[in-house]
Length: 243
Image 1 (spheres, rainbow, N blue to C red):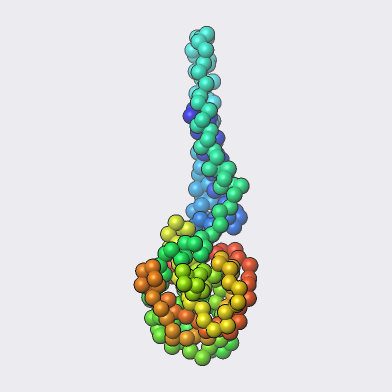
Image 2: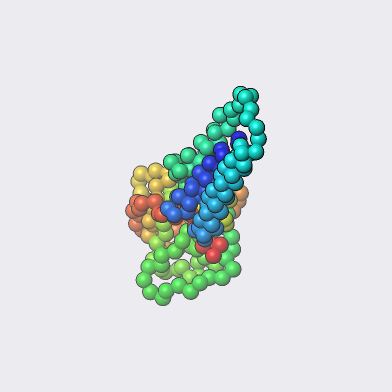
């Protein structure tokens, strides 16, 4: 590619990053805390593209003013190089879905022992993340959960034997390293279960747990008393273990 084409591709890439960073699209790729870096990278790429185009135009004008005229037929740049623009257009026009049940059922639970357990409100229902509930249920034996009404939100995944899990994909940095944390469902489970449906589960702690068939990791359960479908959250990933 010539310099003008390079600057055009750089500009489109920078514009794509700015578009993703100024909307919720970036949450499909990286964690929320990386938004400032994404915006900065987009701005740097656009500035680089404009500088490249300016310097190339200046060099071309200087060359034209100093070289004698030539009658050789110019050779055009290969047009196939413009196919590099297609991934950028896909980034702008097509938002990839967040990782869901397909990835969750083929990846072992990645539950990690918490460094600490934040204090919980003394009264009222506990609105916990899937990661927080699973950590307390497994590594704290449910001591802070027993006798409490608990609410969890996640998407539904079904194991090979039909066991339903409420899952949230946990991030360290970006979607490429997302790993599932699973909570098994028992009790008043909805009669029709559709994988990837987002549910708000209300229930109580149960000491029942199993080993993940993929990696033998611990999967705690929750005794469901009510379940209702909810819209996919703006940020479908869980970052609580990385904050």
